[in-house]
Length: 492
Image (cartoon, rainbow, N blue to C red; front, side, top):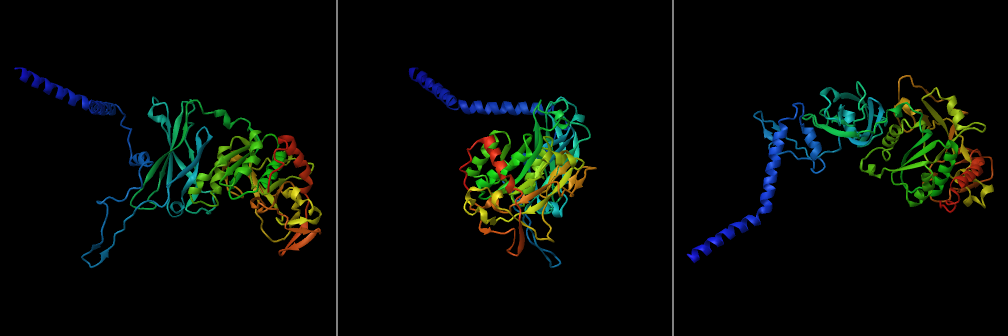
């Protein structure tokens, strides 16, 4: 009896030990079963309009899954037909380019949005991809009519210069304002290939383009006075830039544009540590914003995705500036003496876009009078010879009143609103001096000293032009007043 009792106790202890050893696994299994039952129960109460499309699933798993290869069932093989013809099979793998890459999404009004991004250029060149916009309110208690959708139209503003990718601005216009109650919501972009790339499939990617958290929609933005009178949208900066040339350019233009101005600089790899030190004083004063856009180099577009950057800047600051300027950091805007930038633009206020005439300056020729002290003079102070060759069409730069513009380019916009006007007749009122290539030279630019008022150099005629040289003293005093002497030791 004693032996039987002790044997029974051992069996009980064995059973208890097994249960204890697998307690964690049992808890996990029971929890999973409970969650599964709960999910099945909740799905019974979900409205029938709620569906999960293949594109939605593809969007969910895209961050962790590579492009799927054809399954064995889909893979075809070469066949020899009864007619004696051999039918060949083709096996697609991977993807050559993304359907759509978003950079930014911005409101254009209570019922309009602009989505700025890149898309496959061959897809747009040889097919007809389609876009549709949808607004999903955060307030799930709203009825079905408040979940609105809109057909969208696309703008291709890069004039065909795209490479693997082209720039696309998608305009979404709804039949009525969305999120007026400020409860928040999400703008979805449905991007369809329409059979482009593979006519067997019409793939649609659902992209969450913009989310407005509750309480963040500011309706007054579209009717209030802009924060800035003048805003500069810079193109992509890349390469080894000269800190001294950047220093001169920013001091000159902050003085010209005035207190109610702002400069948006886009760093595509050109803002190295020394250039950043030049920009920091103006960033601290609120005149400069620096955006790191180096990630865009992943996507092969035109000229460091220059068209993408300027269109993003346009829509990002569309309601924050009265005028937006587009030109480069080796170009200097000039208005005649006894006028101001404000007075000139006021006289052109009937136009939504003005183009600006170029004054091409030599990037090598300096006057011999500066020979001994040229290392201490600023670039636009010593490069004083202007190219006067005739019969050449020279690029113009431009400024726009952004509320009347849907998309933009590098040298002008071709997408103005209805009734908006452009003028090219600005000679004598405003122009820009172009010191081509000097921004990328980290050496003394004066390579040829000239003691003449005109010269023929490298088969081009040049004349002495001291227009900007005469302003150098005032610009230097302005810089000293604004930021002190902290940039005195800036290198070429």
